[in-house]
Length: 366
Ligand SMILES: Cc1ncc(C[n+]2csc(CCOP(=O)(O)OP(=O)(O)O)c2C)c(N)n1
Image 1 (cartoon, rainbow, N blue to C red):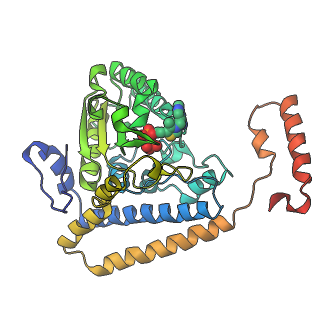
Image 2: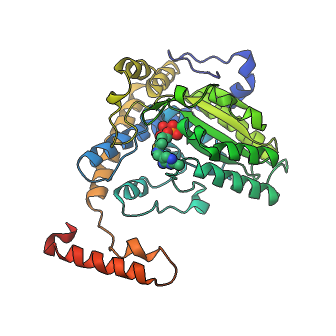
Image 3: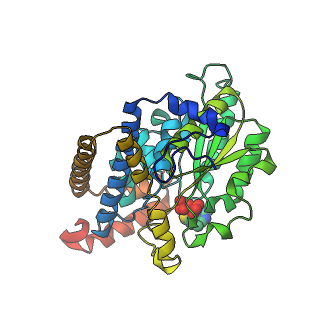
């Protein structure tokens, strides 16, 4: 397992991982601070969103606490031309790609479908159907190669694709099909599996007999396991294999071993299926605390951590106020984008809903 920062916060690059160490050597202090700021931002956003859901402001929340290093590190390992295909928990990767966080909240309130432009942001829309985004990513990577955007010896302008999925999703046929297709076409894609050890209530042991990073090997996709709570490993390993993919080395798989500290979603109660000792074990391996120890040893002063905490307060207030101010979209929107032409069944359903809503009188939309 690639680990550059130990749980105690010690930085060391074993000889066998020297290639990855070179990626860390290139980072400046400003990069380290940006990593920490965004991990803290991701966590604060998560806590605020969960509170908003509990207050009835969102239909659902999908927590990612514990996965900050896996997401912020890998998000920054992606090049400026590369395309990202997330599942539904990648709020941290969204942060590294400048996605407006309110778009994520609007989606979970049910007032839009994401709303960001996948071509412009290179961050594609969230996918709830497990594994579907991995097929989309594989097809995209195949297209990129056909368009001659790979292996031109120009790491800045060539292009690769990364797709995120969970340990449970690896049991879907879509993932195996993607491995095969990507291997046969020698496509520029990195498969990034966040093994957070639970697929709702199914443990990772019930999903695989071999370590997940080996899952692609029979298809011709080599892989590696990283400590997913080590932001430096997450950054360096992703950056290296995205470079390789852009250079034309074909597909690669990264398994980031991490842990979902919270519930699967706000509709789930994890105390029903996992032990509190296990959760406590992983809480003690908190990726943020680990990186904070590293930064303090690098001489980063308390002022910086105070500034980050203040920014968190500001973010929370902004998000709360913006959510309270959201307006419900017209009910017509639900039907508008089903067919391009008018359809009698759709008109009938809209008519029914209008009458139903009207039956509540003035309170219909409050
Ligand atoms: C094709 C499909 N089957 C089942 C589901 C229901 N479902 C939603 S999330 C989930 C568990 C996914 O676990 P994992 O892939 O480990 O990702 P995580 O949620 O832990 O990030 C399941 C079974 C779905 N969304 N899509």
